[in-house]
Length: 393
Image (cartoon, rainbow, N blue to C red):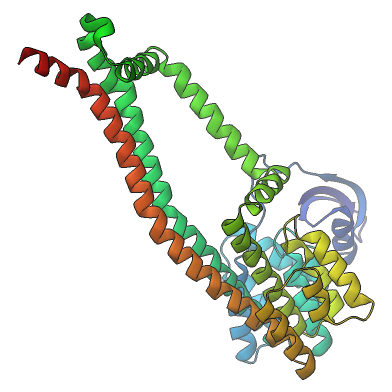
């Protein structure tokens, strides 16, 4: 955030300048360090369409780990990353983080001032590593964690691309037939009147309606798409949609496994970073959907009261039989972090197998359905011609 300031320097001269800061208190702190006494301080409006600074966390963490491995200190490593950055929107938060380190603050505290750039999970990982002195190892675990999450997300997205393209192409072909081809045939069949089969007359009327109200249909479709897009961006709509999808037996189970995979992977990373189990569970609650959060809250409360994680999670239905056994093994061996990450990998494999099977089934089914719909439209258009040819014979 940018501020316009007027201040007195040590020689009592008035200075006017601009300062980049997180908030007003941060701007005043910066001015005090420069020996300036504030006269006025005004926050400048940010550009309406300006985007918040986005630092690619995986690349940033990889570069930071590489510099730390090369023997540079944390401050020197961040200075190097700041100097090589050409984008101003990325450079500014790095400079502000460096200023906090110069002031003697910890890296975790400095990162926490930029929640739009560094998520809470990342900040918590860094803060946990500061207690154990293993920043490099914590960043490496976060890199692995984020890469595994991205792989699972890409698997789901890639599996949905081809069916979506196929469905879109089929809909466009049917709209072209109904809006352009069918009205042309209707002009030919006008003289036949009631001699046309009922299904053909209905199809021709739909085509004539689409041709007569093309602009209205296009506007209605555009408004409907915009409304769907807006609804998808709203948290309440997404929660309602997720709750509805969760009720579908096969899909709901896989959606549940996907959420549990993210949960166990996050808990495992935090535990291996040195964080207590109850704290790690509490920080991971936001990864679950609304349908699983009450059960997870009860399980967390049970763990806080002294019960084992395996029993609490199994009682609330947040595990599978195999995962429950793995949790018990992890508790006995004292290696819960690694065991929860193995559970997440187990869930990932199961989801990947299910996605592969569904993809192989959906593609031919969609092609068959679209082919049948297009075939019905074509047959109904040409059926009167077949009738005429039969009558001439």
